[in-house]
Amino acid sequence: MSGSPGATRLPPDGDPRHPRNRRRLVFVAAALLVIAIIVLLLMPARRKPEERLSRPAPPATPSIVAPVETPPVASSAPAAAQRIPGASPDEAPVIDEIQVEKPEVCSGEENLITIRAHTVNGTDPFLHYVVDGQMGKSVPLRLWLGDDGQIEGQHFVRVFGRTNTPVTVPLPPYRVKNCQPRRLLSVEHHLRANSWSDFDFFAKIVTVAAPGRDPRKEGLDEPFAVLSYAWSFGDGEQTTTATPLVTHSYEGRKQESLYAYFVVGVDIVDKKSEKLSGRTTLALINPGFEAYARKGIVQLLIALDPRFPELGSDGRVVQRVRLWHTRPEPVTIESATLTEYYEGGSGSAKPKAVDVVGVLGTATIPPGPQGIATTVVLDTAGAPGVFSATYRLSGKSEDGHPAMGSFSIMKPPPRPTADNSRQVVDPVRKAKILAARQILGQDVVTDEEIWQLEREGLLANLVVPPGSAAAAQAPMQPLTPPAPIDPKVPTRGPPVPTSVTPPPTATMAPGGVRPGK
Image 1 (cartoon, rainbow, N blue to C red):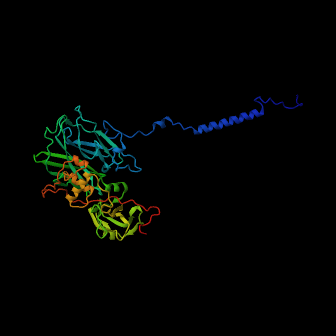
Image 2 (tube, one colour):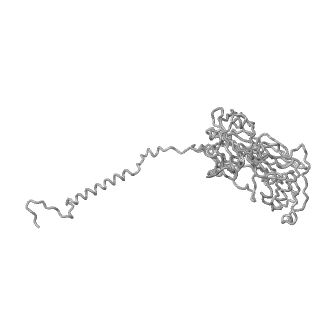
Image 3 (cartoon, one colour):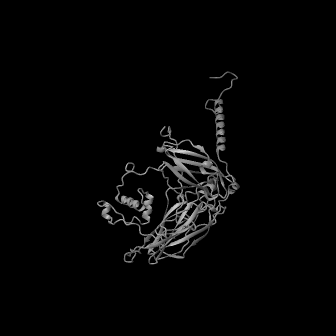
């Protein structure tokens, strides 16, 4: 169809020159431009070559590099020395010297390894040491030859700093000869119950036969008749006993570092003048140092006497308490609270303020391990249902640091009777109980007392009831009283002060009420 005269003819729809198509092209171009701008904004900025070269260099290698470096393992570091929150790791310590006591030993013979080290940032009191898996600055080590004549295993020395950054070096080599002691003397130790620094030490003779040899033909089956045991505890204290068991306390030790190390040794001599020696290393964390160095708190240390509570005939538990601290200046106790805990896990009363002087007899604790002593009483008749009372103390040292501590007095469990106890059916255990009661002159004995009598050899000859399975295997021997003991040689170490376990953590149960109300 022809248009009117003078009218403009439009191109067909498919022609790019059509107005609708032009608008579409403009829209598509604008959209592509926006997408390109967004992509450019999201792309990371490329660094200039000089920026890439200006990165800080990695930290320098520690001063001592072990020929064989093993990666630190979490379980290898002492658990008590935790990393300081918010502190960057320190550089590894520097090992200055590793001293070896003897240039050569027989296979299985002790050799004392002693480490001397320092830190590069002045935090030496936090150093702790591990020699071939045993904690200690000086450690008696036994190396053994294998069937091929070579030393068994690989052996390392590790030193940890304040943030547990370690340095590891091989154990210095020394000659282990192809010979073997006839007997060895080992020293075992364990922490006494309800204490934190009182230990029992036990000397044990171990007979060692050469490979392929019969110990009976070498006379090693003959008993080693010990005359006495001469003990040294690594803190300057010594004693002599007639039995292989001794008790010693380390409560009064100096607390000038995170750990305190003590090499405990014992020497024994038999009737033939044969001598044996054994040692062990005791590694103790110092709570007074740790609280002050890591938290800025003066920790009040506690010792209870007796170690376990005793209920009197009047229904009262009387507990003597000694408190002290490790700072060189006095500590003033400003407040004290008393919390009573109820039997049966039914909760606790609300803490109430008590008079400091009324509880302690003074408000000032002087420096030194003697501290102050006081006596507290739990009247179970006047406070029925209460099984424990905890005193929490707070104050300040002379230089302004907070001081804290707590102790508890507890009602002991009822004495065992046929009604509240289970019958002992094991014939050997029953024989031990009867023998311990006879030796100690008590109608009730504890597991700890039985353990101690066993280590002293006083339960060697047991009367096992006939007809039991154990009786068929055990020789029937009459119970013999303890052998006469020289009064000049104590059977056990001197009496020692004892300590306290942490206070109970019982809290008021939902809806809990005080018994009897």
